[in-house]
Length: 299
Image (cartoon, rainbow, N blue to C red; front, side):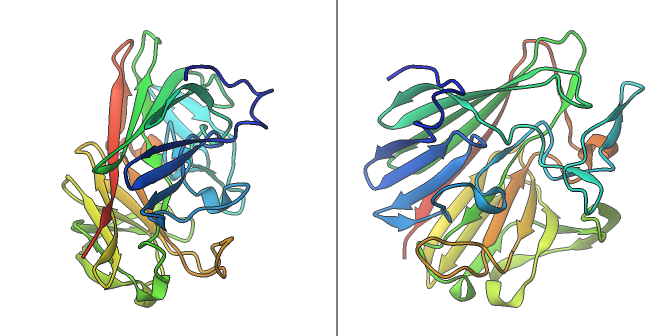
């Protein structure tokens, strides 16, 4: 099936399903990310019925996480983004949390597109193409960004994933993630500049309360398991930052609300539009691709 989903059609097509073997995924048009992923019917991601709660699954671009005061300078010019986290006076999670367009669907693959800008404080246009495919090894996610502007423009990417260890309660789960730095954040969830060594090996989720930023020298791999069974998230070499978030009140449709784990792979840290750390300089007609892979972990 090929086609195009307009704003008028979106009420009838809010997500697309793709499947292969033991894997079934739903891709949401709102936010352009993964709504659900199951293996043999067991969840590898937290899911939802209607509107995405707590940014579950959404694509974060052209910056992930936060930009302090919504302000940044690029090539000597000052820009003011809209403030979307007013309680902390930050611009949060980019500009792609909106309706994406379905351009192609097959049984095991779907492709969505989204055009960013020009937008409040963001004068450039960036075309995003998100391709999701399932095979025997799990779900593959590829996000391509391209611009036709003559000058280089700043770009970074993230995906706001809430992992599920095949449905196990969070308090029974552990996380293994090969990061080596914990970048401390202040009360506005912005980097303080202080960095501490970090080691996350079978870290019990009932002992942590995170909204924290970590960095590693990739490729990064997160294993989220209970008694040896769960989910694995593999990030490509351009995605070496992770925000870990453990809200206590994630709303679930099939189980009581409670603690959840967001593992948010990011190509740059919080406040990257201001610091410049790991920003991509997106060049005219030269696509930049970020890739992730999700799969089941079995005993």
